[in-house]
Image 1 (spheres, rainbow, N blue to C red):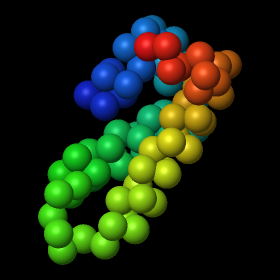
Image 2 (cartoon, helix red, strand yellow):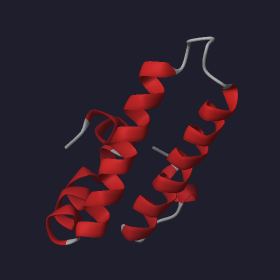
Image 3 (cartoon, helix red, strand yellow):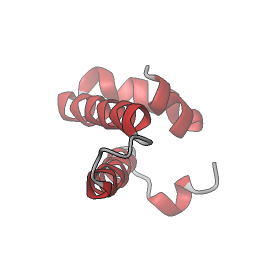
Length: 82
């Protein structure tokens, strides 16, 4: 899959792979998640960036995590035990 998804959802990779095979909207959410995580990792430290950009990115990551978990039939509370 993708590095960020693999690290964030290690116990759910089989379910993620299975759903990604049949659901294009889910694949899109996974792609968006990977893209924003990659952007955040690459740009988190430069002082020239507006801190609000990072807040928006982190908020979007949380929303995408919720969406991924919802598609898997789970909630963030279940996810926090990983």
